[in-house]
Length: 74
Image 1 (cartoon, rainbow, N blue to C red):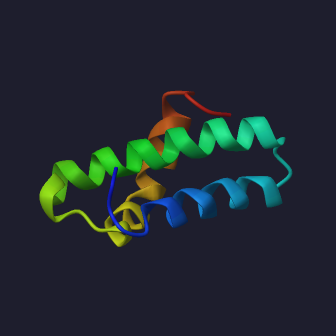
Image 2: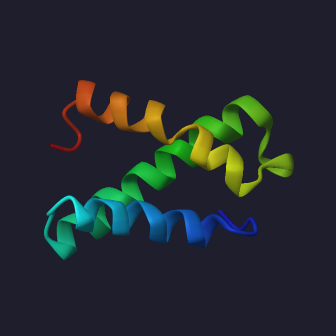
């Protein structure tokens, strides 16, 4: 995802996981996964060409719920 601010969103997701006590490696892996899934969900709804970082943020909750349902992350 090469949209302005998407790296900031990724950093925020990883930092959020770190502050909840997850180990650094696990936070990075889960953060990248959640960020990617949220981006895919946002792109499917909005279209990849018009995607902005806020769209990724808007889909993080859904990405988290889906990953927990599928036991992708714990």
